[in-house]
Amino acid sequence: MNQTEQRGELHVVLGTGPLGQATARALLERGATVRMVNRRGSHPTLANVEVCSGDLYNPTVVQTLTAGATAVYQCAQPAYYEWPQKFPSLIESILAGVAASGAKLIVGDNLYMYGPVAGAMTEDLPNAATTRKGRTRAAMSEALLAAHKAGRVRVAIGRGADFYGPAVRQSTLGDRVFPAALAGKAAEILGDPDQPHTFTFIDDFGAALATLGADDRALGQIWHVPNAPTLTTRAVLAALFTILGTPLKMRTMGLTMLRLGGLFLPVARESIEMFYQFNAPFVVDSSKYTNTFGGNATPIQEGLQRTLAWYRNQEGRQRQAA
Image 1: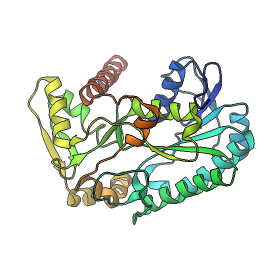
Image 2: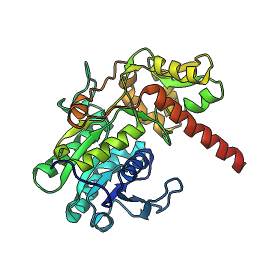
Image 3: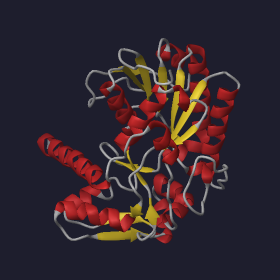
């Protein structure tokens, strides 16, 4: 039987950021026992989850914290501007630790390794990135699949597009969009707003990773997680402002402005090489996943409403704390 029961089993989520939280929520809904790991060992927003501190760059620590687990979900990452320097060693440590514990390793990934693509992105595309972060992602993916092929670790990789949703701040649809829209101000986006651009709702990403951890058909393969039908960025923002009942207000940030920002902000500087994703069609095909596992992506309007609710809640907490 390919589909395995998760109820009562230990599942370990590495990282407590937005994707880690979404994955943990999905696992809890399936009745799993969930342990999360970060460097601090605490997290205020999730109930019924054990949160442990641990240095994920130490494979012995990874082995200890994942002992007895059915599956481990890799959702941790270094700072965006540190990917080329730190991400490979993080993946190497996690691979070694999970290999020793014997669990399955389910990896949350993105789409940087493909480089610019003409047409929709599918899982059989070659790794053709020319950017630093894209080459880093490609090398990590190749190392993961090689470890699976060698019988060292059972691996599945889930890839999402630019994501948005509860707790997602550092994203194209994040802190530069939702707080401004709620305040009646202009949302700020990168690149050409009239290019089609696929966005992944964070809870769909987490649910997909939980599914990959429960079904052995996923192993040894790459899967694009489900996404709502692709719209232009302008259409997504128009839907957002329609929900709010206010006229669309938007300003775009071009490459020149991004370069100016990069003089002062490391994240802006590191975004320059990825600008091609926002100035041309960026469309993801997730039919391989849906044809195999089923499931529907959250409609864009519902995803926006749930994200707005989260941001409103955050604003309420900030007012109470002031």
